[in-house]
Image 1: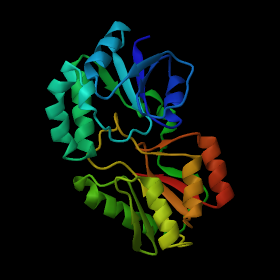
Image 2: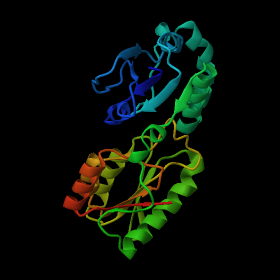
Image 3: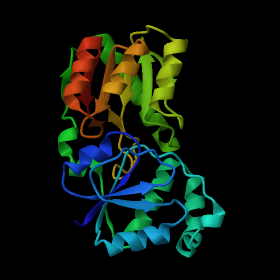
Length: 260
């Protein structure tokens, strides 16, 4: 077994195990799900120990999967290797999530690991261009086009992966708080708008480290926010549990489609 999954919260780590056996790296403080796979415990402050543990198990491939919040370092726990890396990490940390994630990829690659994206392990979780659930009407597509333009304009600023537009008005933009927080805001500030959520990677985003996802819980929150549709990036967003996601969308009368 030469692969390890650095597990965050959510369903994705379990889904990636279906691509083949792997160790599960469990970061202290991250609420990852229990899985039927051997664990490698790790701390954000101890990269050196993690490198050694991975090499000792013969790991050559890594995949980051699931939600990870920005870590809080305890300086008293830093090992020597992490102390050396800390200036690099802090410099990238100040430049935004994309820059930080690219730096983390570079660090692991320097240690001889190949970093794989979740989409590379489970391409079946990605969606080809086209309608996935429901039907698309012209008003929905117009709103989606507007939201996509907003995300493209904000991409260089490393703001977020989602935006909501209703009747041409931008009523939600994802920021550091995430999609769920944006949808809660939309539910309160513009209830029953019938708008569209667009979810897609930022233009410069490294999909090996951070790929957008939707799933049944996304449908529930979109419906609660009073939206009528979701447009995702074709081959750029993972659909977790596609069958359940489509069933939830049909039950809630929420359309889903993928676009380039």
